[in-house]
Length: 487
Image (cartoon, rainbow, N blue to C red; front, side, top):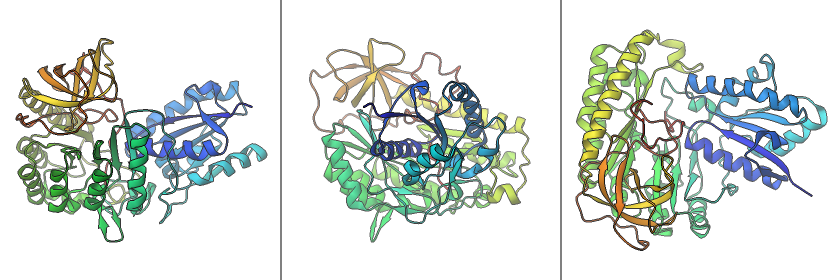
């Protein structure tokens, strides 16, 4: 007898991708198998993001497209999962032309089989959005397709309560998985053939399991799977310390890449955002990282046009960008989110036109930095993890360096999942282009002795680049998803 089929569309950050794998695991045990075709599904979910207004708009638009599938297959159960489900709650069930049967928050996924059965039996809509102080899905092995990179959610929620951020209200307070369960999952991923592991959390470096912190977890994972690259995101400046820096520097398989959100270069704006650090403190962390790991690459998040932001505040942000020379920057216009302190108490008084002007300035600066820094890569050698065929050419492979740089090179004598040595021949602001210089798989993950300079990459394939579509013409582009934003 064929299993029932489930279709899931995932929007937002890497955390949502990891959550989808948890949902698939829960539903697989209940008799559902994944499908990539909406029309084939008996059950369809949209795993959503509420971090920004445009993310919600995309979900509403997509739900309108689902109406045809619901008309053709009325018994198909449709639901909304994740942050938007918790954030909008009953609005999703009461919307005009509603097709949604279930609204499930990020801490209620264990209840899915029972809720689905209840909806099918009664024909009534269901909602479960209660946040938990303890749920980590620690005992659920995510349902993953075969691949190269895997995500492990090591903690959930956030305690920072930045005035612009909905995460504490959509994902709850911080709670961490046990270190031993995470290490065991790393070992299982190695057995399953994965070559890269990404540790995830809204504030991943505030991880804590009894007296063990994130540095301890990072070291334990690196030791457990020494032939697998370890990455992580997102870190908060308040919790970034010398111990974490030293840990990263001590293990070859911990990628020398740090995503460290700035949000603003103005102390006045940082205080209004409740970011709990100053510009001077932030710059001291940058100096600490560069001193311990001269080859490390860095990226950031920046919010443009936050409440009362002046031209002077904006210029201070540009100064930090110029001083740090980030390898990538996710820059966004501020959009007020209901339930946040900024929404209730601070005026959104920067005109949209001015926000867009300032955003364009930051993007232009970042693109210039990117282009200049990538030029340094010409002639350098990198160990690249081969991820698959280039989106732009069937004759080329694409892969990443440990510094998270996208590299494209000819499909000659290389296989997906191998670590291969590539010499960089040219570049643009988003991609390095090179040639294979070894003839067999490189088994160990060691940095080359050649000076790589300070290099650029516009982050993982699961995020939006700050480079415009026009400037991306002919360039390998990331998929349109948002980065994990911390509080």
